[in-house]
Image (cartoon, rainbow, N blue to C red; front, side, top):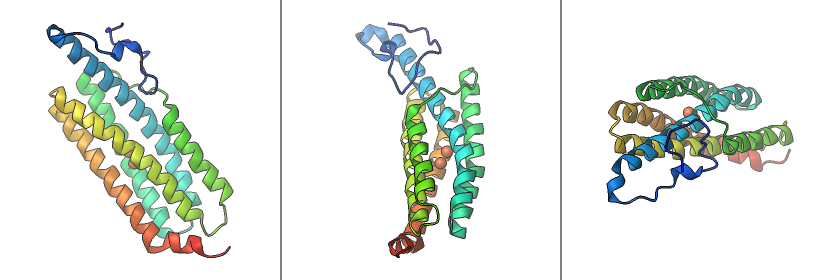
Length: 193
Ligand code: FE
Ligand code: FE
């Protein structure tokens, strides 16, 4: 069981040193385990945000409807700030901002690419792009929700504020995507090609 906070940990494959098995006298270990978990999850979402930053311009180019294109572009700019906020949280921890490959977001983005390829030119393209983008937003929402909670537990008030700002933006983006789907994309998807 490692409690030294070495860099090999990944949230996608839980290493055994995250497993806490001590009693009441192990308060320090609990804190250290949560810090390790917090940092591992930060590394996961940093990797994810950097990948999303690259994916959003492609999604904006692929989208047919102007409102959807504009939505993807706006969220690309927000995502740039999400990366900066994560870098600030690493700074608060006194650690280097280093991402860690997460197959979860890679898979979600791959599915988005599949939709772009398979539905290119089809009336259902935008509805498909929205579904792919919402999978991304929901992934981010679960990560930021957890990170914010853990930052609270660790007493990192400034980190809570930063993580909450991003969490709110992801939620607003998710709702905006639903609004576009309801207003136009799903109806267009029902029409014959
Ligand atoms: Fe984000
Ligand atoms: Fe997002």
